[in-house]
Length: 421
Ligand code: AMP
Image (cartoon, rainbow, N blue to C red):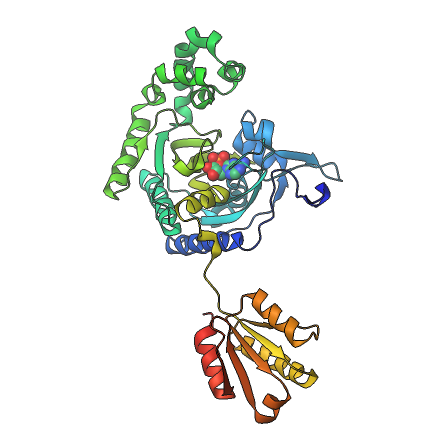
């Protein structure tokens, strides 16, 4: 058992080969799809003024109250390590003003929440997200869900479910809050402590409480949409109609509210059966965020990469292995061959061939062992005889067959078989 000091912080993980192959594949697929839909990448700072998150996510939300890494820096400034991606993108869009009016931006990177670590729940996790700014219309929401479905399919997932609901507009809030409060009144003694507090601070959260007793009560309540204006209900209907037009199956879930205060109209969550109790693969919604007197509206989503990976691995346990990569190992007998091989290795790499050699001047046996360990599919062996003749011993590391070849044939064989394009 390695010493405690060598372990990363609880809830945070090293990402290295071979698992990283799958991460890279998912990131490549995401970039490909985002580009096709006209989205460009944004990389915002990981550390922000705490107010960026407190204002936009809402100061009664779990993320802000319980989970955000919040501290004062050496200059006494209140800063936060980003718990999610949207708030920073909105800060950027507000800063750019008119220039970012219809921006389409995506991000890929780590987020941090001080939650109790468990399967599928980390303290440093990674999100792939996208934001489409402006476009206050149902078609923009439907397009965003369609893009996300496209992306999940590109990654290789099939078995996911999309739950959709509406949060209505801020104008609906009074009616929704009053209606829910009245409906909940007789059940208050049976609610959990958190939900009794939520009645005054964030009543919608009662609807997605994980406590079984609260869940049973929530199921008896009228739907939030029943308290909303007709136009808010129509907006949701239009999103659903367009999704049907695009042949995307969704389930309308009146209990879905999503935890953050900034949502308006459409909200959605995507679940996958491989994820167990933390079954949310991704979440999204339309939002209206006011930051420093500027209000930004848009629609966006974020998917958890760790959870995507769990889902992909359930479908295909060997997914992390990555593509078998051809490689050639150069083996030298004597100092002159060593130096010629150094030059050859550089020339081959310039031509796109993956190759390596032992650099510490060890004997033949040790070099052949290193070739085996590297997973090389071919070895090129040279000593004084080969240098004098201008030839190479080319050994197939899989079947052990060795042939003598001259430079043109060596290049032809290595570049045609081994080039990674
Ligand atoms: P949220 O905006 O909180 O719904 O997060 C969006 C997605 O990020 C979720 O659906 C998860 O896939 C992922 N996610 C959120 N929190 C965590 C966490 N602590 N660990 C791993 N993934 C997370």
